[in-house]
Amino acid sequence: MIFKDGLPIFQQIADRLSDEILAGEYAADERVPGVRDYAALVEVNAATVVKAYEVLSGHGIIASRRGMGYFVTPEARDLILRHRREVFYNETLPDLFRQMRDLGLTPDDIKAEWTALQS
Image 1 (cartoon, rainbow, N blue to C red):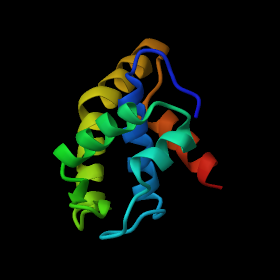
Image 2: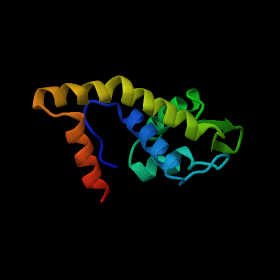
Image 3: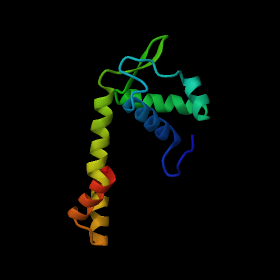
């Protein structure tokens, strides 16, 4: 896994696992890879994956089952989508609107580009 500067590695791993859950790689009530296996997959220390799993567990996305590992919670998908929409509306969209204003773009310009991309 290639990591970006400016965001802690454990958070990037948590985001990746969230992406995998959204993509259907891990369904509700399905076990996610063990800490050591996931650490080997993304080539980091197991302690970093533990921290990522703790973050996801704290958000209710995965849950530990004693002696069995971590499992995707039934509400994981909805929790991830709710959080990402909140980030989109509170962080991404205001920045997009600022850039549109600075570039002199209108909602119609954006709609035309959106339509072209959908073709």
